[in-house]
Structures are given as structure tokens and as C-alpha cells.
Image (cartoon, rainbow, N blue to C red; front, top):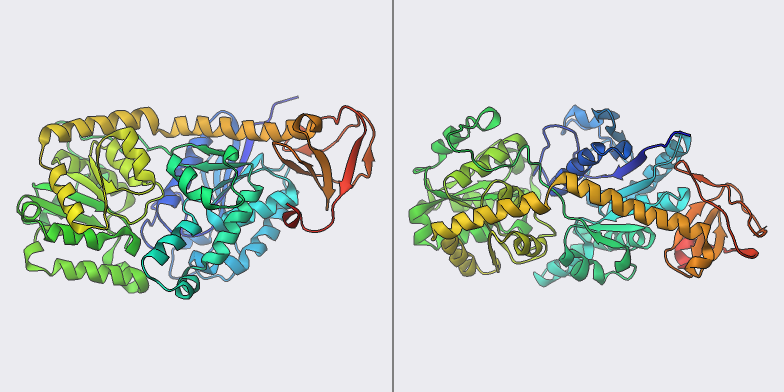
Amino acid sequence: MAIMGLVVLHLHLHGLLRGHDLELGRDSDTGGQTIYVLDLVRALAQRPELERVEVVTRRIHDPCVGPDYAEPEERLGPRLSIRRIPFGPHAYLPKEQLWPYLDELVSSLVTSLQAAPRLPDWIHAHYADAGYVGARLHQRLGVPLLFTAHSLGREKRRRLLGSGLDPSAIEARYALGRRIEAEEFALSQAALVVTSTLQELEEQYAHYVRFRPERARVIPPGVDASCFYPPRPGVREQGPGSGLQARLDALLQEPHRQPLLAICRPDRRKNISALLEAFSRSPILQGHHNLVLVMGDPAVEVSCGGERKEVLDQVQGWLRHPALHGRVALPRQLRREQIPPLYRWAARLGGVFVNPALSEPFGLTLLEAAASGLPVVTTDDGGPRDILRHCRNGLLVDVSSPDALRLALERSLADSVRWRQWSRNGLEAVGRLYRWPAHGATYIKEARAVILGQRQGLGAPDSVGGHLAVSAGVVRVRGGHPVAEFVLPVLPARKPPGAQLGVGHGGYQLGELQGGEVGVDVLPGDPEQRR
């Protein structure tokens, strides 16, 4: 019998996802998570163990966004595709408004997956909304669930409350109660939780009642070495980066100064106003350096209104300050493929990359900068702590203090010998620790180990000290570790010794129940309420 490759389904439900020309920074829903998911599935599709990788996202018919997002399928390669399924209204919606429509997606996916030749070997859900859908699919179909939150609602609530916002206003705007409930539900059903940093695991997921550390693995994401690499002496930028210098020359009075580079979407959490305040307070920075801010297309962002317009209005207010004229640039309409040359431009001039965010679950831009030979000054929060511990290529700083940020920026640019050491450190660490091929190999190894453990647990219940529980076609080994749950086509009352449990799942047979008579309890009610 031929050995079938793995089939993996990813769920990424909000924002705008396509295989080309990512609209990063267009809003708060289209950012680092979008890059992560796309890079991850592309890396997995290169693995020999994989037969097919599919990403499910929302199908959108809206004149405010491009027609690509209405296409039901987008092929990204022979084994990789994006499938767009409609749920909710046709219009593009922010993630906080998708909650009422998620069960509609669950029903659509159950129907389509049951009609497929085989079920996926596992489902990987990204963020709370997809976590809810993935957990419901696990309950309905028995497909193992992997979950990555990317950012967590409890952490966001804590920070918003700390900033002085009213709890009712927070809930009305961000729907954090529903989000946290979905995160708890996903954690209760997940066979594996994939995190990017140890800090995320120990200090953020740990606040969740249903989180089980033994089911979590830290697998740092990678960087695309074909795009992000250091400047090459004597080699001029071609392609997307060829006109970059001319654009910056037009915006800066002295464009060959050492630059401070920041890349983010216009979001209050990104704390760009603190960076501008720090720059404005420093005669050293104003006298010897430039500040380049990449925040999407300001004209488009302002037209969208809301928080993005508010943040960009603040930035434009700073730009009107006479002392900053010609020293701060806000280039418009930079495409994703122009970002790698921008890092190299800053590295070639001996600059630094700055991430002043108030909170940062991971910090993928820090890895992109490190892979480009560009040292960093970054928030002392979340993922950057792990990255700086490994890379040793810059400074952590308390970004809530503009003076502390100012001093860190001045120090980072003051010593050329240290700058070169930081640059080398970052390049070496990224090459050793943060590559997508290595991530893909580790990811598959961990996922297969967990799923094999589930299947072995079901085949030998005595070895896990549990018993079989059946409800609504779901058989579960309970009372031991690991917990296993699969769908049965029928509801058996009892099984005799050595009886075959003939349940096919993803091309696998789940084995025999050995050793004495196995009782099967029929448990009423919702499985989630019984846990």
C-alpha cells in the first residue's frame, strides 16, 4: 500500500490574505501574522512529508478591497493553495465583527471536509477566531488541532486597563470577552500549542486556565534568506530597490546620514509618537541622523479614518515641527518587495532599526533587520527579549520613557566598532536559529509526535491510565495523558477483549483495544462542559 503524505489545513480568517503584493499595514488585521502564515505554509509545502497544504480564509466581495479576495481558490504551487470561503456579509469586516458568523464557517468546513477523499492530518488555527473554528472542527470531526494565538486577549486587556481606558469601552471596541473565551476553548481542545518565544509561553499563555504547558512547544519563525540579506559591497540594488535612494533623497536634506528606521502599521500600540518625541528631544540625533518611518500609504490610511487616521495625524503634526523638517521621512506607497532593500539601505549607512512598540508578542521585523545586518533598538517586552538574548545585536529599552529611548538611540549609533559587532552577531544568529527550513522540520516533527501520541493513547488506554468515553460519536481516552479524541461512525455499547476499533482517520487505522474488557461510558451533554 502506498504511503500517503501529510495533508495539513491552516485557518487564517481575518485581514487580507493573498499570495502576492500583501497589503501589509493597511489595517491592524493585515500585518505580522499574515506574513508568518504565508511564509510558514510556503516552507511546509517544500517538505517531502507533505502531500498538500491549504489555507482557509474569508471570501470577500467588497469594492473597497481588490477582486483577488473574492476568488474562491488561489494556487500558490503544486501542493499549496488558499481557499476562500464566504461567511457573514460580503463586505470586508474587522476581526472584532466576525464572531457572529464563525459557526457558519464551521458548518461549511464540516460539509466540505467530510466530502473530501480524506480528512486533514491536523488543523492549525491562527488567532482566537480561527482557534474557535478549529476547536469546533476538532469536536465534530476528530481532526487534531494545533493552535497559535499570535497575540492574546488577556495580555491586551491588561495593557489597555493599565493605560487608563474604561473596561466597558475596551469591551465595546475590542470584544475581548468573546476573544478570551475563544482562546480558552481553543487551548482546551488543542493537541499542540505553537509559540514563538519562551516569554510568550511562560508569561502570557500561563494566565489561561485551560493552558497545559506540556502541550506547548517554542518554535521560532524564520526569515526568508532569499529576500533579507546584508548589503553586498560594490553591488547596486536592482529591481524593487533600484529607485529607493532617489525617493529618500527627495525627502531628506542630507540623505547619507546614519538613519533610524522604523516599520509598522499606524497603531497606537506601535508607539511611534514616543520615537518622534525622543528624536525631537535630541540635538545629537537631529544633528547627525535621519528618521525614516514606513507606515503604509499615509493617503490611504487617512482616508480609512479611525485609529489609523488619528495616529497619522499625530505623525504629520510632528513633521510640521521646524526642527524636524528634512530630517524625518514618511515615504508613501512602498510595496512589500521594497522593504528588504530598505533594510539594506539603512545597514549600508550604519543605521539602526527601531521597534518602540508598547507590547510585542514576537517582532518579526527584528529578525528581518538582523538578517540584513542592521542592529536594533527595541522595546523591552515580549518576543524581543528572546530575540536579543539569542542575537545580541542591539539594545532593549523601556519605551514608555522618551528619555530612555533617546539615550538608547544615541548610544546605539555612537560606537562604530560595537555597531559592526552587533551586525555580525545578528547575521550569525539568524543563520543559525531563524530559518524557515529548520522551522518546518521542527514543526512537522513536533506535530507528528503529538498526533502519534494521541493515536497510541487511544490504541492502548491502559498505558495512559484512562478510560474510553463516548458521546455524540466522539470517543475519548480520559483520565490520563495524553488525552485523545476521535470520531466514531457508530456508538458502541461495549467492546469485547481485543476488539478492533475500526476507525479510519487521515489514512491511518487506530489500532486495537487490548487487555481485558473495555467499558465504554456514554456521557451526556456538551463535551466542553464535562471537562
